[in-house]
Image (cartoon, rainbow, N blue to C red; front, side, top):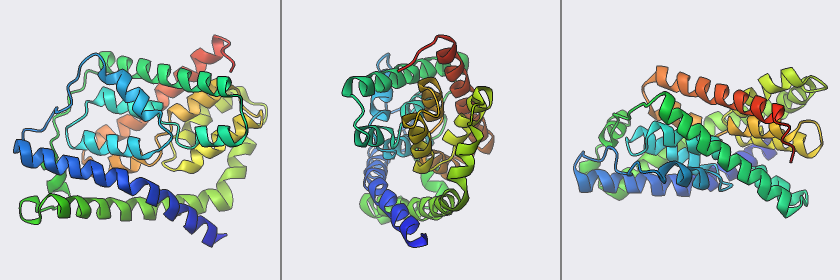
Length: 280
């Protein structure tokens, strides 16, 4: 079993690394090109949040991980970060496709997820109005990176290797935990207890690992949870992005608040969808 878990962990990591490398490469280029004036490079116009929701919905948690890194580099706003996190579904679409779900039903679920992510981003923008004061130079200093001497390509490789080692180690530990004990224990919690399900499923979604999205989606496909709980759980799930955020953002209070904010919005989302009787 250990060998299978190790292979799965390395496979997931291999899928993630190319996008992270491209992200670091772009950040290094921006820092070199704009000489430390890179904060807020992405224009925060009215299309920023909808675009972030669409990108986050692509079934690849590398986009949310890249968003976390771009936020740490001062390129994305906080509302945009939350939007990407909320729209990320990780393994949902591949599992639904493999289960032969009707394409129309699948698209409805995905459209609802994107719409909820846009609303979450707008609520975050209006309620918090947090400004991102970080810069790419800050991210480099946190990594003890000597970008001027190393050059763009070597620096990007160094950043990618550092985060890969961290994500790989934590992901392996989480996969082992979920593989040996977690999955069945989590499923047993949801036997006929809708209130407990609404509170716990988003907590499962917060686990920074693709196994969380697999468990939540499989429970939905097996009829154990409703579509409103599916959306609530997956809105809290951003893949390994929270690992990137905690690794590279030195503001621990903000990181903890981000986890709380994701959980709160996800629970509220599930509550509203449940009361509205939305079933897909």
